Image (cartoon, rainbow, N blue to C red):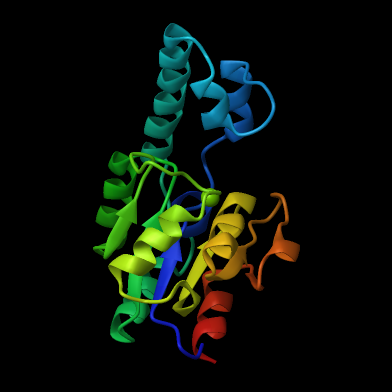
Length: 191
Ligand SMILES: [Mg+2]
């Protein structure tokens, strides 16, 4: 892909096989409609604490079950050989990113977790990484399996690639590119 300086990956369901059951989390918390984190922020402090405890429990389970998407580690290594910078934007916690890095033996250049003041679909996480790399956002590619990934990348002015998981919602209409595997992503990047 011409003029590309770095790739910004979503973690859950993009670099890893999707295991976080967002529907189950919402049921357990009895969350209202719309963005989950925003909804939690409107609750009372005890309700907020309970909701985050549910999320953390699901995330711990997901860490134990964590598996890389087929070909993900190889793709990341190939990016390294081509001097592409590597970033992660996730609404998950640093602990989960650490588990991923151990698994694929890659140190990412910049990682943005939910400790960052702005969360996807806000464009600031993507802009923040582009600034850290001294690149215009248009020289970055955001790869993610959910609407928020694509919205965040688009609003920041990045190129966007939807990663389609079998059986999950399709947001390919929102993205510049769509792939269904790491092999397809490799073809998009280098063929
Ligand atoms: Mg995801």
